[in-house]
Image (cartoon, rainbow, N blue to C red):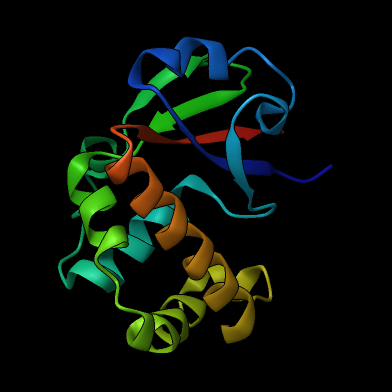
Length: 143
């Protein structure tokens, strides 16, 4: 069994509800990202911001809902990551994707630059929708 990961946009007060269903895509706008680990979002932020999280990923992507021991787990993108994602220009997607795909986490998952690029395009779209509509962006993950 692999790791299931969805990025979800929803009202900030819906975090608890996102942690309840088996498939948040049934109720919210999501991006399916099977195989992406929590830590991979930290690596992506490192790539786009140019500065490492310095092992403080919980500051940028804190746990906000779910079952802390058994999952599913829900983490909320803080404003720094959300803003950084929303600000990636279309012309920079391939460069960001290449750097992210070269990371240890994505290499272990055998991700190509094309795979990473498609995910980044989806993340940028969700981040822009979230900012435009005063929504939050969450990571829902389950085993």
